[in-house]
Image (tube, rainbow, N blue to C red):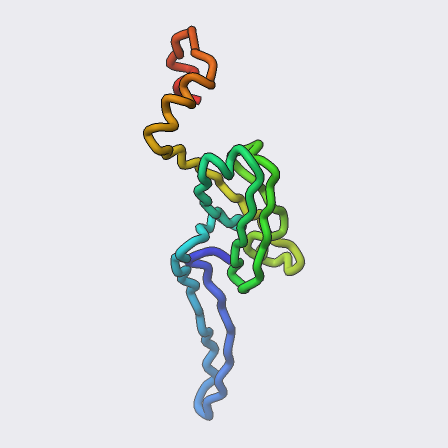
Length: 137
């Protein structure tokens, strides 16, 4: 169920003079989570890595909404996004199905200034000029 979803409970109250039919309606209001964001049935988690973690193995623990701890261990960062099926929000009217958990990785490339010179000499020089299409990617 999403933000604003209405849950209606029909009620019937017997009155000696008349029969009253009414209902009670609850409207869901989501609260923002400190770490996870919701998009429909899916959850989004943003994780920042150091350059060292992105190049080599890294591990972190994500505490889920139900306080379970999900261990994420990657040998190296091969993609900007990791998708974990069945770790999102429950799907409305499908009690045994859940959405996906998307982990978006961001690499912090802050380095001490003395390492920049070594890094520049170690990496090959790019000879071509980037086009607008390449910059947009």
